[in-house]
Length: 332
Image 1 (cartoon, rainbow, N blue to C red):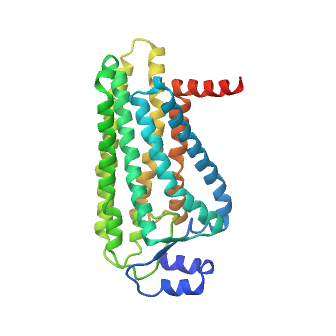
Image 2 (image 1 turned 90 degrees about the horizontal axis):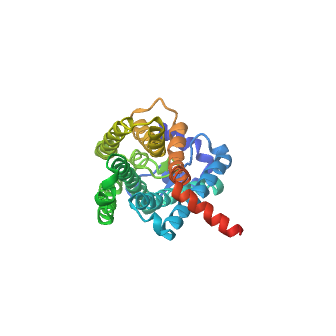
Image 3 (image 1 turned 90 degrees about the vertical axis):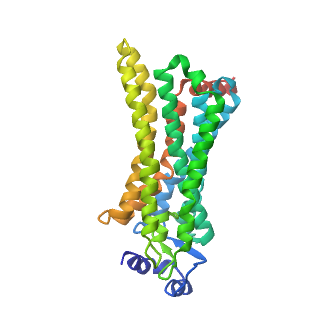
């Protein structure tokens, strides 16, 4: 019923021939139609302003992190390697969805080919998983730095950091593979209109004329086995970190050490709260308005890439100092 109502509501956006093709049977649609944010079509231009500003900030911020770390030999350490991995992940994840989203908001360019939709789906899920894995690696780095500071350089060596990065990439890439394959195998015979701003897995397979429980169950398996386990490992790491902090002799030392962890905790909440909200609301949140679900998940595509350079860059003394040094050098 929800999809039918949406088809009627967006009829004035689409030519007659396209509407006619949406009501005929087809098993492999050549294109999908992305609605953007259903119910807020009139405000798309205004919504695009903060999205464009955040996307530009994310691009500049993450490239700045990569530039500073690669140019400064003193920053070639585990924490900054993980930070570079996070910056690359943020750039790819946001770029896989935001340009198309902005083209919908600005130019009403709603069509996306079936193959491009599946590619976008794969990149979104795989790089979202990579981001989660990198946050676990950064939590491990904080744990070793605070709980075993004298052994930090011997525990987190460059080869180990490379192996952790490779494991994160392989895990996320392999686990995300079934998403496009599952979406491709279903027949689509009702409509090719996706009530979303990008090709999320559940948003696409809900259009299928088949029992999609396998897709839904796999999404829940991914959510709880990957993201759930990552949250568990992060919680364990920070439990040990907090125990070490409370054992510090002075109040100033406790505040200073805890301050280094606050930024990481903010990044963790910014990533996992929208992930769990979107995944669960798509399946069980029928009372949550559709426009609100789509808006929150669209914002999720750009908020972490914006926050990470600010949280880790501006709050990290070495990067902040190097950035100020670059600007000061240019002024002189």
